[in-house]
Length: 463
Image (cartoon, rainbow, N blue to C red; front, side):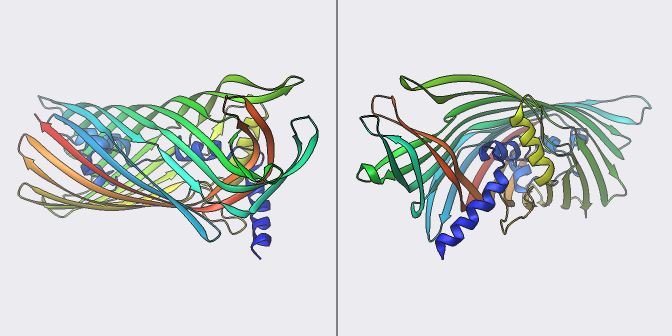
């Protein structure tokens, strides 16, 4: 029964791949088009829901009008401590892997200029905010004896062809790197009723990625080999730019509404990788450098806040992607990617709710967010490549007049379908030479659960 189900999965997955490396599709959405939760402890504790409240540097990412809400200068820095556990389940087996890291999560400041005279503009402000998110992820899928394929192109030491059957002893996907974003924002306070702002957003991504399988070969006494996927490992350095604009309006003392829009992010991706080729002397490596132009979706956010009094505020944000990812066509690969996104990608949406309670100098915060998978459900696959994400945040803070300290805890859970296999793989001998080269014609899937536990600590100074 399992072998039959496995065949169905393989056929259905191949439909989605459309001859593309799944990691390109995954990174296009998960890295270059995502709304990452990364910022100050206050922002994280409220699950990033501050679009109609503002007054926090990291909220510039949601609504740049946030910078217009400040009435005093502010400098803050955030330490981010991350723990993640990724579990890949295949048939009745599962492998889990944990990662820990600590890094600078946020750094920024805002300068406030109070106006004079009879102008309704009360403040004109300038802010800079930098955020950093760790992209490290390791997925190890367990072995399964039903994962087999044959290769009729293998040769023995005398050059004679042999037919061998490979059996899976496991698969590993390893990604390291960082995603950064620097906002340069301008904002103003108009008559304490409207707050407007705009920002220039400079983004960067650094990725190093590995894709390998461990297989046994029956014609070689079932010895095991580690096979790297063709084109991996590779490094990718990318730069992106977008612009944002937003507004926050006070309807009355209790109700605030906000709206913002961010242009597409125009990315330039630089990749370095190697591929195995063959001539009459045997296998050899060719090394390549390439660049791609990628445009992530335009996004809009609508926000509403209820401010009961000076002690309690509640905010709701709803973000929606307005366009689809798109590569600049330089060859057949980009055409196939664009066709895939055009037919299979749906608008990415996210709902976030956050609240803050104040008692004297103490702050208590909480938030919840949920975002959908951007890929349509087909052939009983839920959350293919990039899954539904749920975020829970809690935190507290102390305000010491000029200085403040905030802390937050976030639990981010993502469930998705992991796709692997289907491609050319090569094995290296101990001396670094290519031992053999083979093609895996099958695509397989595992169920993936990723749980991130993040702790952030922010120190700030108001002046």
